[in-house]
Image (tube, rainbow, N blue to C red):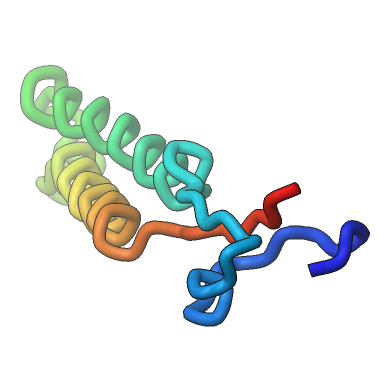
Length: 97
């Protein structure tokens, strides 16, 4: 890889090149940030739905506890995003000097 080229996503050929170092993006992967934010909002809505939703709030939504339902849905999607990060980590090929 030339000096003026930017690092790219690692593939099988990059891992066999002795002059290329493959590193993981770790916490800076956008999927982990999105998963964390979805999880935080999901946790807030789930807590609000379990303990802070009154009958008048449920009456506005045709008897459904929408805070609880949306909170659980966000927690499920957060778990999927974080599982995706753990099962398929982003690897970046960086040329060694």
